[in-house]
Length: 79
Image 1 (tube, rainbow, N blue to C red):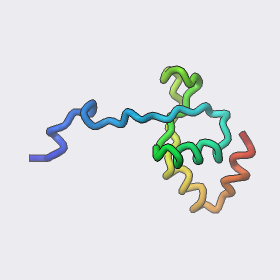
Image 2: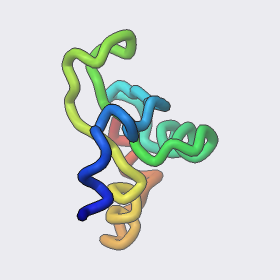
Image 3: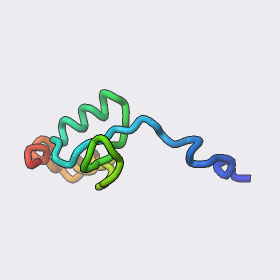
């Protein structure tokens, strides 16, 4: 039997959520993600709600920028 079939999503989901606005500078969001040890950030229109979810920023997304040789500091300045 598959071990994963024993669990419901509600039993394992992460409750430590970091919500950020799309206008925030990328470098500030990365710093907050690393400081709070949260690998994903919900990008929302309103920080007081999960309504208006625009997407999820992950540390993998940031790694991809580095692999593609894009300047993270330059990217953050565009916001």
